[in-house]
Image (tube, rainbow, N blue to C red; front, side, top):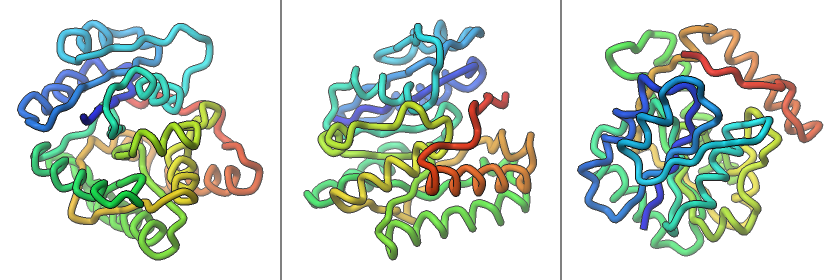
Length: 237
């Protein structure tokens, strides 16, 4: 069984479409929304369409915590973590192809390419995602050190639990950290034949130069000190 886990925070405008795109998915699956204390109608909308909705009652929430909460509530042996604004053109074709990788017992995780939605895509998106996708592919395929974006991470549940899941304390780069640790116990794959699309909201609001700087600083901080420099990853809506 496939468990699709969606961390959400202030996603009332996107969450319904994100959930409903899986209505026609014929692979046995469940959709879990893990909400991070939204103050809009995200939870109400999610409860109408998702199989499971988890709400967070603690003080400090991160996307990593939301994904971990979703994983704990899951019943599938494969966990697919996607963000709340992600669109997959044909979920049946996408997941059928992705799940074939797990027929190899050495494969513990799969990620894919990402692009901005065609209707909002800019030249800067094409350039930046080409660089990002190339880096992710290189690190998984050549260096075998694991790398991924939270937009799409498909993970064998036993491996996920074996390494203790995401680090709750990381507000960013928790996705790369997960794949790095997974790469130490098995094979991580970046499949260039698979692509997810999203609204590139953060890049369009903050600008690509600023976002690349944030990613670089936080990547170096996690690699050197084990913790991200950013203390909060404020939603951009």
